[in-house]
Image 1 (spheres, rainbow, N blue to C red):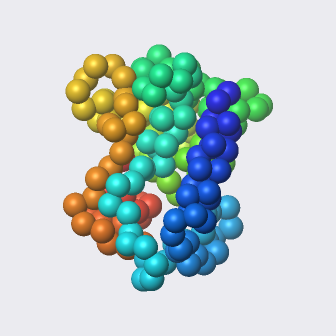
Image 2: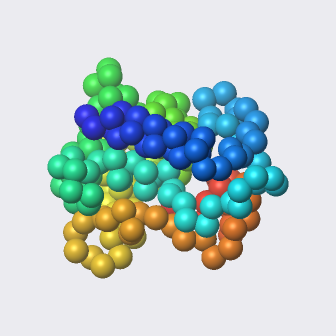
Image 3: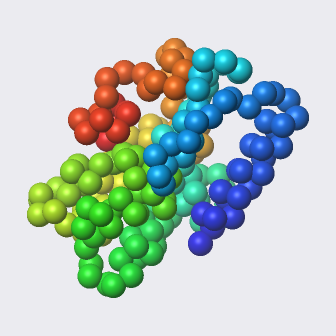
Length: 181
Ligand SMILES: [Ca+2]
Ligand SMILES: [Ca+2]
C-alpha cells in the first residue's frame, strides 16, 4: 500500500520547507490520538488552501502515481483500508472500530465522514458496502468535472476567508468541524 510512503514524503517536504522558509506555527497538544492544534494567532497567516482529511485519503489512493485517483483506485483502496481494521473478518465495524479506521486513514478519530452518516441503516455497524457508498458520494462531490478521476486540484478546498484555527462555516451535525459530510 502506498499511503505510508506518500505520507512520509509529505512530512519530509513539509518539515524541510517549514524550517527553511518560515516560522512554524505554535502548537499545543491535541487530545490523545489527535494531531496537535495549531494556533493561528501568530506566525504565518492561516492557510486558505486546505485539504479535508477525506481528500487526503482519496489522494493517497492514487495507486499508479499519475496524480489522479480514479473510482476503481478509490474502491480498491477503501476495501484495503477497511480490511486493515476488520482484522477479525467480521465484515462490519462497530463505531469504536470505525474511529480506529478514521484515526489510521483520516488522521483523527473525529474526522468526517462521521459513523452516523456512514451507517446508512442505523444498525450501529458499518459494513464495507456502507463505507464504499459514502466514498462514492464523496468522490462524486470532489470530481467536479465528472471525468471519473479526482485530481489534486479537485481535492483541495479553497476557503473564502482565512479564519485561523477555527473552521469556516457552520459545524457539522456531530461537531467534527466541517460543514460537509
Ligand atoms: Ca491514478
Ligand atoms: Ca450499518
